[in-house]
Image 1 (cartoon, rainbow, N blue to C red):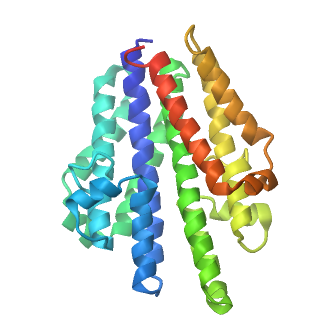
Image 2 (image 1 turned 180 degrees about the vertical axis):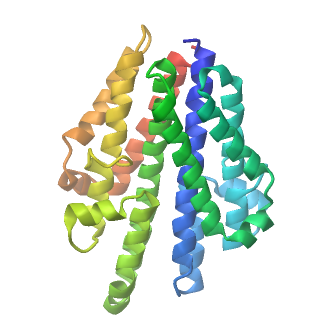
Length: 317
């Protein structure tokens, strides 16, 4: 496969996955903001959205303060912000258009229709129609694209690079959301009284699980109250949860083995090494080291893998 074709497919998948992940994160933050709480707690929740994506500087250039409506506009419909849902879906469509002949008709129609529907909506229209409904729409469109891909594409190199991009983006997002939300929610627990913790615990941790479609899975696996430690275990070490780090890295390693070339031995080795920490890891060891430090290293390793994949396979390779 031409490296340019692989590049477009890889980034089409990353941008599509990024838009969905952002919709999930904004949705859960918006739903949590509807629960009565003090203004400082709400401001911290929206600040966490900005920090999660390392966008503090970019946001401050456009807005003087952090409010729900301004963060939503910035992350949903800001055309000048490259990581907004609008920009991600536009970039996904542009990359898909560049390799239109490689995609099936069902995939192209899904991506193109998604972009056309979003392009014609202003933020005011989205907000008036209900942002929760909009986030559901983004997630549904992402599911349609996945269904079209799995249901119609040949399992060739094009398919593998699409999956590789999606899994890398998903692993990075799961690690980031767990890092930010775990510490913000755990810190809030320590600063509140026992009665307030009992009243809010289930809703907040349940909302975090819903952001990665893992709420029902948690109840099935643990059949008990939601605790921070078990949430972390579920999202890190479960091999059968699609958005868990273990599951993502297992898929990445398998794909890299299939598409490896004469330049990619070190990339394959590093991916396997990172996967081994999940396959043979224990939560006791992770917590003993410090969850934040462990997740920070994981995020850096995913970034390194992405850079190495670009060097080994994509444009400029």
